[in-house]
Image (cartoon, rainbow, N blue to C red; front, top):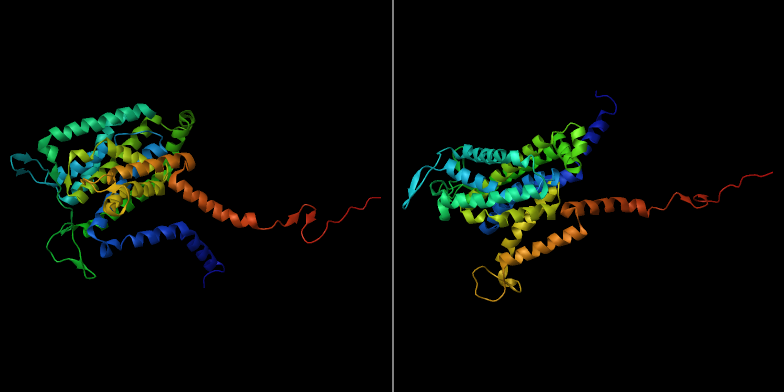
Length: 396
């Protein structure tokens, strides 16, 4: 027979494991398995864009929110991941008068190779990222965006130039994540490219979230947080400032590369114009609105900022003053309206909720937990124990 109290200990350990936060995360993950069976292609593609934004914002949040380093060049590393995957996975072929060079790697190897390629680009920049801080690093990374755009336009053999290049679909153990005519259906639902790619993107997001969470709550995260708060105190504790900053910049670049490769798979074509300064600014808005230094904040901010333009474009006909892209009607274009809205959200967050959406939800949760304790009547009154008067001391 098990010893006395073993069942109670198991129950306590199970309760400690299945916390409300973890249960909510598990329920959200299970709900995210359902969209391919119910949603139209537009919503699936919008969700894939949001997944790519989540991965990119997680990496940028490690750099900005945890390490306190400003980067305006995250779009460059996303371009390295996107073009790296398209180049490594494609074959060398001719498109009209243009010859495109490819690496002919299996797509399942090309994806992590593209991530490593973006990390290598970040490591090459790490001598600067390890020594520069604040706005100086921001200006230096800003140059990467313009240099990268110039390379994407002129290295036509690798990038396809202004028109970009097609992206080979991912293939996993013989299953092509494309609109292949293989008759694949699950529970009576035909599975095309978006349905198949949805689960791959969800797996990438889960791995990225778990890795970011482990980094934040482990020794590297504590070291980077100490370095952000006080470089002198961190140096006294033995944290190498230059090496730590260079390492987190490289890891952040790898996150951006994974996001770029996933975005390329969702778009099925990569073009230079997407990876511009506006994308870097959008990523900064995501982590500020969501909450700096928080995994959940990066996810919330990325979903909000990336999905808002898509929603406004979809419902442009039903919204006042908003017109669809290319429309000749008077009004504000859906993309511009989205930037106005999340710009206003950014200002509101900075003024009323400096911790972002994640900090706001944490504050509401703490307030809800402390409310019963505040409303419970005190066990003692001003005169002594509740329920009667205090005994007077006998004085002679």
